Image 1 (cartoon, helix red, strand yellow):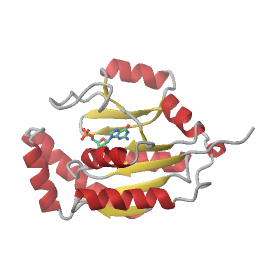
Image 2 (image 1 turned 180 degrees about the vertical axis):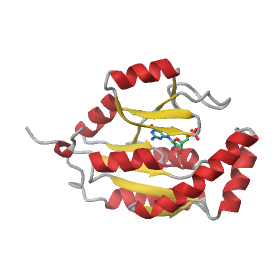
Image 3 (image 1 turned 90 degrees about the vertical axis):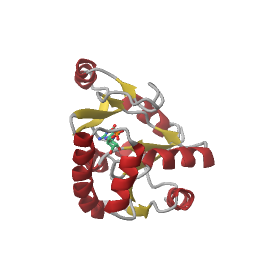
Length: 198
Ligand code: 5GP
C-alpha cells in the first residue's frame, strides 16, 4: 500500500501577535489546511467557541486525557494548561493532510523532537511596543494576565532563533501569503509518518 504523508506545521508566536487572525486567513486561502484544536483549562473568552477555538475542559478532565495517552504534548502557559489531542493529528497526517498546530515554544520544542521533519514557523510582532498595544486593544486579559503574557513574550522571542522560519506580522495579508509560500515550498516528502516515535 502506498504510504501517505502529511506535513506538520508548528505555528508559534507571542500572545497578541495575531496568530488566530492569521490562521483564519490561511484557512480561508487554503481550505485544505487542517487546524488542530487544542484542549485547554483556560476560561473561554467571550468571542470564542468551544470545539472551534479550543476544547475548554476542566483541570480534572485535562489530567484524565493525559492519563489516557490522548495528548501529543502539553505545556503550562501562565496559569493554564494547553495540549494537543493526539488522535486527530495522527489521522490527518496519515491522510496526507497539512496539519497546523498553534502552539507555544515549549510544546513546539517537544514536537520538533518527536517529528524532526516538522516545520516550525514563528510569528514575530514588528516590535514589543506594538505587541503591547495590540494586546491592550484586544482587551481580553486583566492587567496581571497581560503583564504575564508580555513577560512570556520576551522569552518566546528569544527562543524564536531555534525556529525554521520567522515571519513578521506587520501586515496580515502579506504575512499570511508568506506563511503559505513556506508551506508550499516544503518538500512534498519532507514529513514521513513513520518517523513518529512517542
Ligand atoms: P491563548 O490563551 O492566548 O489562547 O494561548 C496561550 C498560548 O498557548 C499561545 O502561545 C498558544 O499558541 C499556546 N497554545 C495553544 N494551544 C496549545 C497547545 O495545544 N499546546 C501548547 N503547548 N501550546 C498551545
